[in-house]
Length: 347
Image (cartoon, rainbow, N blue to C red; front, side):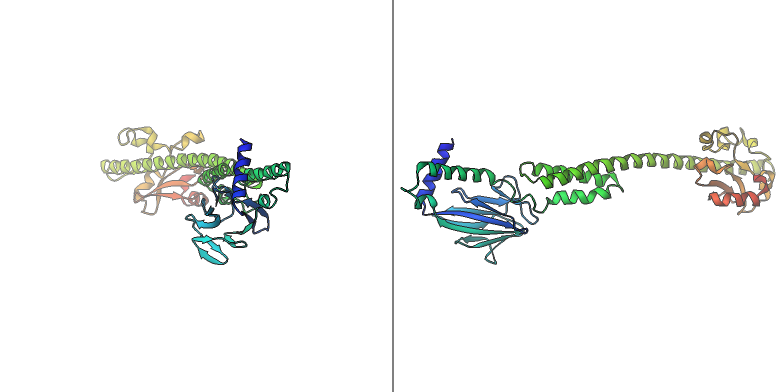
């Protein structure tokens, strides 16, 4: 198989008067040389290209350098940022020795020289020719690698790293970082860009750790919020039911309120649990709502007639109170002591 490759390359080189190659330099002045075979070279960011460039602005398939009738040409294959030849934007250009092809963050210099094999025909030995063909075969195998391990990292890697600290705010950012890092690792698996793969691995691990912790805390916090909200909603319904029961009791007893809330059961409330805050079950204490008693009959619209007996009933977020006009309002924790001083019956 290798002998057939040598024969094919020997046939191409001896048939043509020239050999073509390109020298690529990135923005850090790292250079690499690639020979141009008869089938041409495809340049781009995709791993399927013959020359893979990972720098920003390079399309998956950016340009193609081909040979036709013994002469080289460069052609834009639908890239986003296009290409410049000797400073002028072009889509198709016949190349001459020394022409400079500008791609984003990369400069390609086209070289055309007399074939060293043809010049040495009849002078070099078979062993020397075989050695040169081995060198060409090695270059052919290396041309699919990245131009430099020190080029700009894959854009997905940069995006994944930027999302890692943001993952502390929501697990969705962590998921996005994991996906981007995984895609970048897949695209760089054959490129030899060890620094880029290391950064992608760091982003992947960081996103998994931070996102996992965030998800655990977020779902735990949401569950606690749901429980507090459910208790408060039930407590509000209880106080509204008590208000309706008090109004019916007042009509049946000549405008007077009961002395105790328990007097509303079972005639005016369907179940005794309505007279107790649902948060009581969590505090493991006994007792029901605090009630103004017969003083409620002369209470004004701004006076409290029924209130939670403890702020602990709602995870110390405050107490709910039923006013003389039937409204239910929240009493903040810091105001609860003031209410105790204002309404002696709260003692």
